Length: 301
Image (cartoon, rainbow, N blue to C red; front, side, top):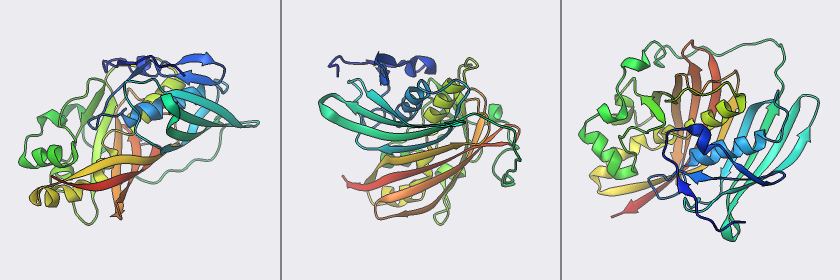
């Protein structure tokens, strides 16, 4: 394992972030990294790079269908991440891979299972989108995070360190500001449009990895949204971190086209919250589903 330090990603080309070195067969290594607000590697980088490492070991006609991801410890942004891929299954249509991510000194950062399959013609059905999910809105005309100015936004930045800044790689729009600023405490919900800013080549593995990267952006906010204002009034902060993450691809996904995340948190208790999301394209097709469990740890100033 190398001791070379990684350089910081400039946030422009997602393909550059997902471009892994391959020092040995079935072993891959990150070249650059992205730091989050807590001083660790952004979870979306780990999700996307793990999927990309697995995809490099399966036939090109097999697309990602499911990902089960366990965050084991916060990855340090200055050190490379080594991804070791193991084949669990190679059948007539399906391939399954285990990916273990680690850093210098044997620091285990993630354990991942990814499934791939060759698409076939089959019967299809889809649950209808909720009438109020925001599909009728035009994301191009909706506010960015940086457009939202409110005392409640300042509370969010202070209590959970979710910043109302534009990300250089991600276009993020909010159809309902109340989801962030005045959430329903009994059934927190958040809807947002998201996409990569730059057009991507027609590479199914890159789009899957870029989608995995996007899927970690703000999804767990819905699991802590209802607690921000009470904790701000009490002068306390909340440490939020991803514990595990699951994705299912139902239909082809383009990460450089608008995707609507309709997120709901059915539960938060005993230091953990759960976020569930249905993801639609602009045509209203359900293209993917995501679940994420997060740590909610109160901090006293």
